[in-house]
Each structure stands twice: as C-alpha cells, then as structure tokens.
Image (cartoon, rainbow, N blue to C red):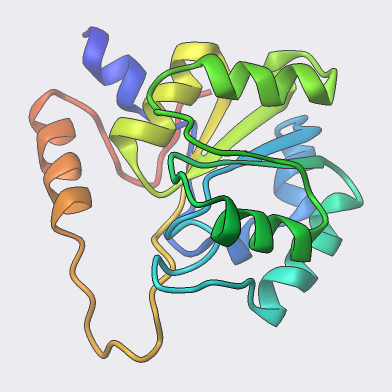
Length: 175
C-alpha cells in the first residue's frame, strides 16, 4: 500500500536521538544526517542545546555530516541551536515537502541513500525522507524534564492513523 511504504521508517529507535550511535550509522552505511529540531533534538520549549546533545553531535560528526532542517521559522531559536552545535541549518522546510531536504542533501554532496532523515514525526519527517529516497529514522520525542508526564496528541494520532493504514511500527525495520 502506498501510504504504508511512505510512512514506514527504515529504523525505529524506540528512544531519543541520543541513542543513535556511530556504530548504527556505519551498519547502515550512512554518512550524512538531516535532523529535525523540535522534539527530535530539543524539547519544543528549549531555546538551546543540552550538554548531552553537544557531546552527541561531536561523537556523530566523526562518522557523518550533520545538518538541521526544521519546519520552524524562528531564525533566533533554531539558529542559536545550530550555532551551538556548529552545524548548518534550514528553516521553514514545510515537511513533508522534499525541497529543503534536497537542499541539505545537495550541500552534503553525498548519495541520497547514504543520508538519513531523523525525526520524531511520521507525517512530516519520515514521510519527507521516504519521498526523497533517504534512509529514515524515527526517534522518540525529547521532552522537557520539568513536565512529569508529556502527552503528544498529534504524534499519537499519526501513529494510530499510520497503523490503521497498514504501517508496522514495531521494532522490526524495512531495509
């Protein structure tokens, strides 16, 4: 089914992006990462990168190029996060549009199949990456630790609708 193919990530981490390791990237022959920002790298309420994230990017950068592509339009907020991580960024991506993902991939000068789109949302990040032919990685959203319980109604609806359409979101992955 069309929808199932485009909404099924190649890899489901089942945890935050911080669990994505250089070994995982090398296993899948990935040399570039296009990263969503809001709730993939930082909670939506965060204006800066955590120390953990800074260390993670330094580790990942040893094996892959990194670029941020966000639907967010805040140059101040997204730019500040990108500057702290020392990575290029693109705003206003309008994912699932492929245009800004293609722009980030072109800047990396890598074959599209060696670049992963990493994000927390099926209908934006995974759909955009799959439409472009990227390897797609679904991560759990980053949450603000000051919230005891955080609900994700839009993401929960996306998961429900995807499963209704035949997408398998178990830990098994397509390749």
